[in-house]
Image (tube, rainbow, N blue to C red):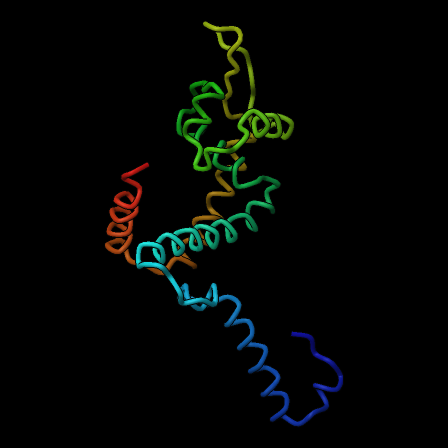
Length: 183
């Protein structure tokens, strides 16, 4: 909120009204819970279609929260995903093809992501011992460090922003896996 001289010199009722309006605007922009309110529509072909849209909207919402935080570490959401994949196999080497198969967003350009992570010195790339045409990758200490710090921040955002119990999360996981059975 911007405090103008006019606002400071006005009556306390006007001051209170201005503060209440500002808080209400912030609340409306951040605290939308129902899908219908978020997308300003309540016309769905079916509850299944609504559920699909709700999954997409929620994924966008979560990604938006994390992208903002990851930007402070100079990495993208996709780069963070590659770092996590590599951490899961560390200290083993992984080929780019195997990394690509584990990506959340399957359309990601993994060789380009690897290029950028190598420039930042978060990973080390070498040729495979068995097949010299194969590129293998591992995390550097710098990569491990940035991943650990970013993960702490993302975990804090998740803890603060995701308002479901562990039991609800288990049920949601089951439903989402059921949702994707035709994958």
